[in-house]
Image 1 (cartoon, rainbow, N blue to C red):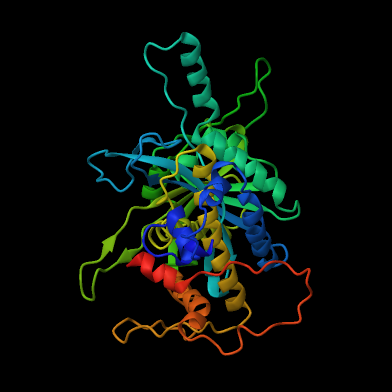
Image 2 (cartoon, helix red, strand yellow):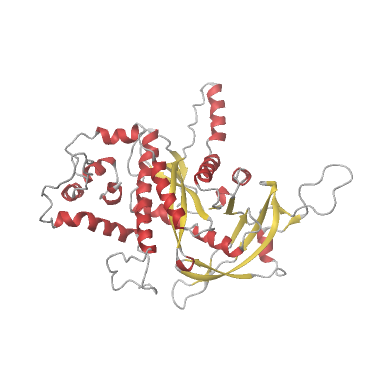
Length: 445
């Protein structure tokens, strides 16, 4: 895990071994650790989750963002790899890349003034079943169609939500936030008790009010009432006034304009799931001082708790953007997915351990920050814009530099009393392996 945080270049198992100076020893045990299914990353993420729960105030909800991502691969025989849609492709052309698909949950660590830091608490491989050949047996095609129903991303997400609900104490309410791909009938209908889901939806989604009036004398009572306006129709309706709310986003507090109606029903989620529809107007921004005012697209949300306060609903959804930051830093700073391992257990455990190391790094930093400890990070360059607040949360790059200084300062300038005999009892545990600075430097050269 230290090699995942500190190793230079590609974050492969070979570099992890070299980062601790083990290139001259037998390397098979390090590979068998992952390929033989000897790692339980749920224990690592469990420690992170418990730390986040301990940091929450009494009665506060546990806000979790969920999203999927792809890790690009080159080998055609790597477990779970296949052709995936490139999310970074242009909007006018769908590009395909050879990659794996992973699902991540990130929970919010609330800070002052509405800020929060999202920390990963789960990272699971969600592969699609491999399609059989055209001339395969009919039973194989039937098994493939059944596997598509059982192993799709929505079913995998719902299973992880149920597991998370069991792990979180029953007295703590769970709030889940996701994008439009998770706002579907599988998630909304299968949501466990004491859970609230907030997710984006289409601007033309068809909603209905609850049925009104007495039940008919004959026949079945209707499940849906008259048709409600679509989110886009509500946004353009001048008879419905905008409401002003404040929330933290993009480094400072902003004033948001919203419109909402509740309760409404959606045929996809069923007549038993009451929803609240929220329309968020776009915020104007300028690329530079004095330039033209620009606007982004409005956001349309559905919430499974119609009685949830609008301030909490808006802030919880804005915190979800932190999971996108986690994806970027895990791939760029930590190199998650660099290792071209082949077996199924290796492709689950190795990336998960890398993400767990990233989560533990941030938990340690957030505990120090919340406790009032000033982290001795390097001063930024003079040309970088200084933050308004004197006390700022460090970046991941600054935390990694600080960790390197703490671990390697003794290797650069060794002390004088490291080799003296100690009076430790003979039954003490073996010394933990430390990263080797000369090995890392020569391996990176």
